[in-house]
Amino acid sequence: MDDEIRKSIRGIALLNASEHDGKTRNDAVISKVMGSKPELREKIKEIIPIISEIVNEVNTITLLMQKSELETKFPELLTVKPKQDRVGLPLLDDAEQGKVVTRFPPEPNGYPHIGHAKAAIIDEEYARMYGGKLIFRFDDTNPEKERLEYYAAIKVGLDWLGVKYDHIKNTSDDMELIYRKAEEFIQSGYAYVCTCNKETISKNRREMLSCKCSFGDLTQNTKRWKDMLEKYKPGEAIVRFRGNMHSENTVMRDPTLLRIIDESHPIHKNKYRVWPNYDFAVSIEDSVDGVTHAFRTKEYELRNELYYAILDKLQMRKPRVLEFSRLEFDGMPVSKRILKPLVQEGKVSGYDDPRLPTLEAMRRRGIVPEAIRKFVLSLSFTKSDTLAPFETLESFNRKIIDPTSMRLFIATDPVKLIVKNNNLTEVEISNHPQKDMGKRKIRIDGSFYISGNDAKSLKVGDEVRLLEIYNIKITKIVPNIEADITDNNFKPEIPKIQWVPSQDAVKIEVLIPKILFVNEQFNENSLEIKQALTEPYYLELNVGAEIQFVRYGYCRKDSANQVIYTHK
Image (cartoon, rainbow, N blue to C red):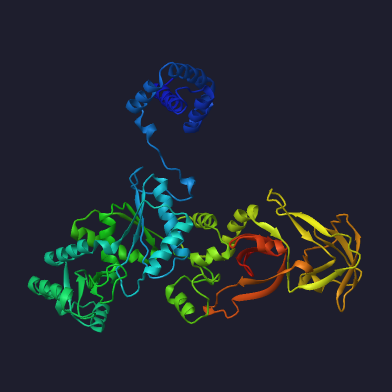
């Protein structure tokens, strides 16, 4: 037998023994040898005696000797290789186990939404996939749009998602470093201070023309930089990268790197007035933070050239940048430009309105974090536009919440039903059909409420089963529905309907979120409110409890008198 094959078998035997307190077995080694070298399956009869021999040899040496031989002769077997199927994401290029660093850099200018969830989950999954680190970094260099409320909302959203990060920081805490890099750029001639007005700059970039400011010498640019820090007003001067005004990539036509913003910063107040734009800040931060793989949505793809150019000029370490598609749901845009007016104009109740794609709205609606994670990973890592139907997320959520959702009866648009010969005073019903979640008792006096839809389908002579109690035959429809008990036997052929006892019925509202935008127009009928009655046990449930109303759907208890419809 080939020496290389014997060596390979010994390595596998040593590894298996070291993982099992110094002892390995023939069957374990055979399985691993056949799995790693399928070409040997035809020679299995020759291989088995050799495996047995090597297993016996390995089992006679100590665990310490086994590990020592592994380290010296088979170091490649000790390298942990990430498994792609662990998270459903493709393996990364240039990724070393234990050395991958990713970052999630949201700007605190709004509430986190499903798009943020996708980015954060991908960042975290890759960090864990390679035994690396995740940095949670607030990209907070635009005081005009940022508020402490948003810092808190994003952190709460991330914690709710269960995303575990290794370090949290603010870009704004590195402003002194960013200023030093800006001065380095100016001193090296890679950037200049432009005092042209906004219209002239835009016109020149369209026409591929350099402005007069780009020809200024170092003395002029140094003075203007100092004046930006002290004298110039917003809009009077910006720092521009000396790119290529003839580039087909418009991003590279002398883009802005820093600008003046006199608004008070949520954290640093008025300490700084010149702030970097995203391109300048993110490239520097990614480099100094040790990020190895920077993930961002594909609309930034054209900005990669600038990202790398900035780091080249500064002679700083360059991370690998990868893009993926944005995520939003059909009819549920995530753009702050669209969502903010809806809140301000009162078209929705707030950023937790269950019609919205924000994380707070998802939580309130009854979507659980595990479902969001499974949904995101099911989409895989792709640049293809992701406009997913909300039903896909619902299907993941349904599988997760079904085993723990309390079952209750509900009557929407309720109609009264009198069972004249009722013979029960109380019934005990299981809270879940499969799980042991206890039982509840319901008082009965023959007077019930049933769903309006069920009532519409009834006619005199119909036989139906009131779930969990008895079968009845309808004897009268108007002015009230009346019925008599026929028997208690379960009959699969007759309809089954839920009911609520009239004497203890609890009034609730059911909020039913519907598609928010139809053909890019706000849907004025996107929130339906139904009046309903439910069982008294509802009042004993905590706010936030997931309920499956029998034959109706899953809902989340939002208050003592209101539930939010989650999905079927």
